[in-house]
Image (tube, rainbow, N blue to C red; front, side, top):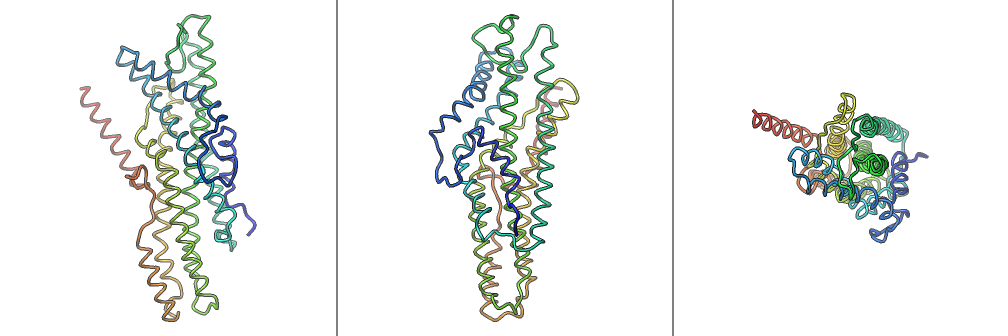
Length: 363
């Protein structure tokens, strides 16, 4: 079927390529650590911003001020970790995307499969647009509101080698932050979306495999060849799952360990930020859970095929494959947490427990 199987992620990787966070070539076998253009783009913005935030936090003598600085400091540090992760492992994800879009093994062979891909792509695009509105909607409140403070305040506290409170010097760090904040936000949400799409596409491939297994018929002349091809497809998907886990593991693990709350000006900004933080934790678990559910359906799909009327040799092959399918396919964050909906509920429960503990300590 003539349909672009990875259409939504092409726009995302195009953005990351422009910011030098994704390989420029499709066939790359190892990370490119001589990416001087990427360093030139991100060292003056993300990395310098992180250093200035940490210096401000270390030099501060006020506990409350240090806590306020650390809130954004940890977020930007996590973003820096995501960038390093992309520089190191993006070639793995790119190879998988290339295989999905060009390999005949993953070709869509029915209108039902095309409709499933088109529906999920459309839904993913809507989710991503909503996430962009929630994340980018915070920026105007962060950047514009400090201009109305008297005396003027920077959007985020950071160390400078001069006294930025002087009116003549205030605009230099303010313009720097006004440029850096949108840049880091754009890179962050785009890298997050690529991670989500990798899990979504893997779950779609597993669902496609389940549909094909369920349609096997005993009177098919090419039954054995078709079945072995599906076994090969499943084997390749499990290998790809390991590659995807390698790509998303550390960034998702960082995301889970550093949920940050900020005191944003105004109710609207707080709601946008709250939605963005929840979605950053919830969406990876939704797409990761889809991988688990799609993999668990393969056994039922195989059982629903026309296996009772197959010959004894094919029934033995089917039995062996069903036993092999009992090994679950799941992705892990940091090698510890299975990425699924139970992880989201556990994270929310632990966050509430910590909040309740802090409230009791204050009392």
